Image (cartoon, rainbow over the protein chains, first blue to last red):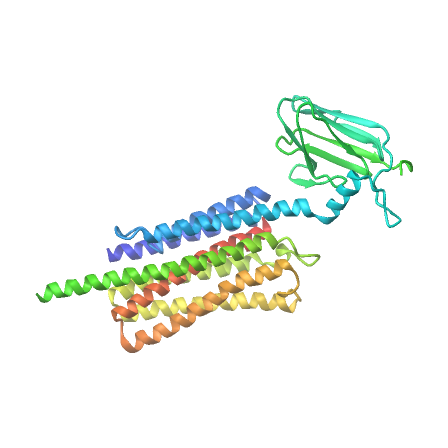
Length: 222
Length: 199
């Protein structure tokens, strides 16, 4: 019994060493990147938590009180609610409340082309219209070239919804104050091309649906 | 008669031990809740470094690994000390707790060296939200380690003077719970703060 206790500490120590060195190795040698790596090292940390709870704290070894485990589990559930909740809320807040983005959305939707005598970059008059048709999980044409203040319409001909967002997959950005929009069948979405430059867009759920558009400044429209 | 009284006494003591341990467990869990709020805070704010260096430019992974291994080893030696304490072996108990104590001090030294270096380079609590949440999270853990060391030091003095009586063994078992708990919290600091910065 008493010999067994020492043994449990030794086992716990060796396992904890392994579960410390493996994530360190993963990060040091960049075995994976970004989200995958983060999930992997967090998973390993949780395994090490369980190892230490079992081998160091000896929780659940005694046949009698289960209160400690119950209290631990309820604490963990509170922690999950608090941390996951804060992260989700702040993430949403961040993507919806970014001030330049908000201003741009407002300026574009209301077509305010100048504020206090300064041009906002919004278009005063709309020019040509371009179309991108998404069908069978491909966008066509994949490349659109347009002038500033033209409009670009996305049409969904698939039965499922698409969530279109800008930038390439994993590095999301926004275009003219729009960060993403939902595209249903028969409900096209039109954006005003008020920012010049080259831009990418893609479907958030199916990154294979992707394309790009180039907006050139032509000195007119404003 | 005598034997029965003894077992009765033992049973009472075991029940008291369980009660005290559960009470302490409730404290540990509320402490864990506090840490989780600090973790949530860090997770939300770690990107807000406004122009000054991010975690990956400040942190040193080998240093973090060193701290982790020191604390893990001290958690292990603390367990071994408890095995000796339950056997009633006073000298071994003191020996292993002394090693735990030294490892704890060493951990604290590395942590303070890191803090000192950041502050000397001008990365203080006030620099940005990322550093505020970093210093508060890691600093709170460091304060816990400090109070754990004070507790360990005083309890060791009591053991030296009075020997291993049942009240002191109970105290030591709570101390070891506390110490293992701090190591578990550190696993998540190591993973989320230090490894996470490079992920």
